[in-house]
Length: 182
Image (cartoon, rainbow, N blue to C red; front, side, top):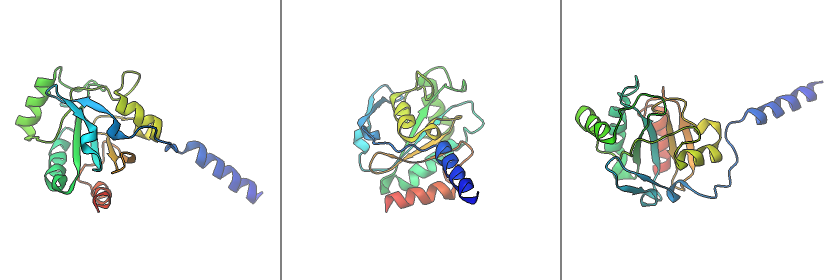
């Protein structure tokens, strides 16, 4: 009986595990995305660097996390970290155009890390980066809300994901980033 319980629990654990064992036909650096100014960001330019991508929104209760994203950028960019903000209206909390988002970020938060154009991050219309993330990391890579974080390692694979409630400067994220920079 005890062995049946152990086998059952093991099967359940594998069934509910979010992270898939991906073979990564593509890595993060194989993609491109448009910047907030309309230029193309070739993610291959970040090859060999860890990247924290965060889907952002101007009207969200977590919008103050922009300050913490900027703090991460200021502290770790010279050590190799890239912080990439991806404004999104997937949760109906973003401004209507890129110029307004850019002005908001620069004036209110003094942002100077890279920002993309307003981008879908979930569902059928999600940008290919987010489709790739789901395919390779499972449901835990799908943003559940604004300011959801995906940490990409130096190999261009997903290292970890963090809920909106997890602050970008939390010890959990800082420790993981520092381990990737070593």
